[in-house]
Image (cartoon, rainbow, N blue to C red):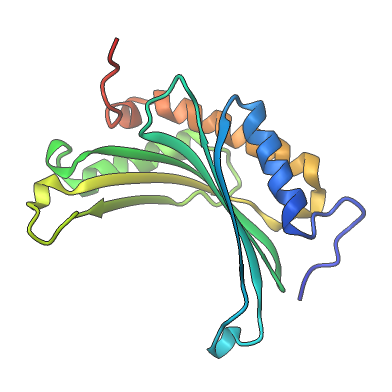
Length: 189
């Protein structure tokens, strides 16, 4: 059931997209892509449901192309939800060392840097481009996430924009942490 919300509550996808764009833009990032989709064919427990989703992609000219902010927003019959992510395409696995140790260091950095009181999952994804690829050449993608709480949607557009801007600022501080900075490509002058 879609929440009824208060006077300022965000109830549909478009004002949520606008609030996120405003918040990320305030932090100095530029929209580099926006995709909207509507899904209507579901089976099983989702039969009869429909969703509208938006994917937003942001970059900054002063950061490597391997760094982006990505946002996934979803409008369902159960309300709005969304995730804001700092995405870092890192070096090959062979350049990193043991994955559990790296994941632990990144988790500590995220815990000390991202806003408290929010769900902030961390994803470390390794991809072999082909089954014949040597595991040491697996490509790494790192995602630091912040899930938008329902209370932000209920508080309205300005609250979502402020949370987004603060989270992106925390992401920028995270990029300066040695645990993350060592995963970035070297700066070429």
